[in-house]
Image 1 (cartoon, rainbow, N blue to C red):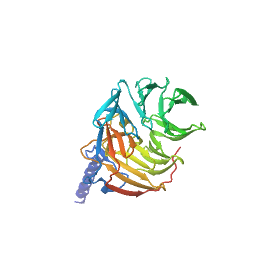
Image 2: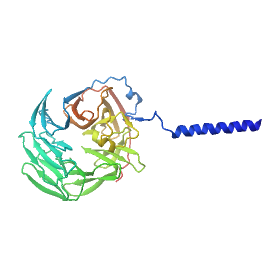
Image 3: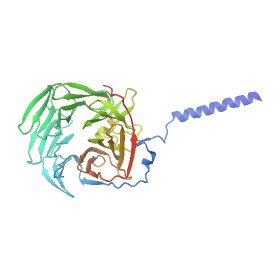
Image 4: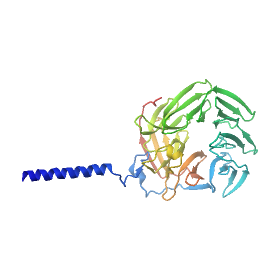
Amino acid sequence: MKKIIITISIILIVIISGFIIYSLLSPSDTLDFEIIDLVTGDSESTDSELVFENKINIVSPEEILGYSINPATKHVYVVNILGEIKKINDSSSEKVSSQKIKGINKVRSSKDGKKIMIGFNYPNQPVFSIYNITDGNWTPLPKNTISADWHPENSNEIIYLTNDNLKILDLEKNRSRSVLNIKLTGSKLDWVSLSEVIVMERPTTKYSSDAWLINLSTKKIKKIASGKGLMINQKDGWRLGFVYNSKGNEVFDLVNSETNKAVGYFNFRTLPSKCVIDQNNFYCAIPNQIPLNISLPNDYLSRKFISDDIIQSIMIGSDSQSIKSKILYREEGSLVDATDLKIVNDQLYFINRSDNKLYSLKLDKVVEEVVKEEEVTEEVSQ
């Protein structure tokens, strides 16, 4: 009798063990998506019954590739998919440039919104040209320019990179001056302050890339970040960074760019390109859900992944330790994948990748507010 009981027990153990192993190894239909935690860390903040007064408005009814806004006049200009430039007047538009441009892959406006830089001819040798909204004239950048960016304050200066030189072009004098002899390919320029420019390799998860800070006064070069999938967004003394650490985990952090030290790590997943920095305020578009098989940033940049975003503001306290978070926009049934965010007066503008139209969101009404204290002193790895 004891032998029978022992035999039955062994059989049951084998069956139960097999079922557990199968359950762990077999595909699951309930884990297709990963729910993204908000920076608040408050479970009540994801309550779908909350009503948000903020509503987004369509600024441009047609598909666009980029835009420019004059803060003084509040005039909005857009570059449509044909390369034409139009001025938006309420519900109508006025064509100010009929020039059709193919292969556009970059549209950047000067800070005053009076000039637009367009990079085109993609995927071949890049070509750059500047459109002056005031007089309607085009100014091509020098041949062999591979990347360019506006001066952070002066709309008459552009920094640009050739195959072997970093130069600054004075648009008024139509004259360039050399900054540094340097050979870089496939790099992006970001003129982050009056005396500093960041040169960053294109982000990918396939291999590690670097970001270098060049001091335009001293000509010194310093590596500020490195890693797979590296993306950064720096302004006003802050740097938002996305990278994979040595363990292969995603890290989205906030760095004091003066000390190069991390002051906080966010517990949500998004990319620096989906955020805008405005002094101590940050506005980020955060995907509600990201499929588990999605690899950032590659799948986002290739448009394999279109996100459905919550738009949130984050304010860093004067002590750099406290974080005040406000959800600005969340709406069911409306797909918003925000990129190219800009703050102009009391409006947050962005291009919605789900329909490629320009939207705006008023920033003065917020329903929910929470505060999270966080203390981090870890220095960013060089």
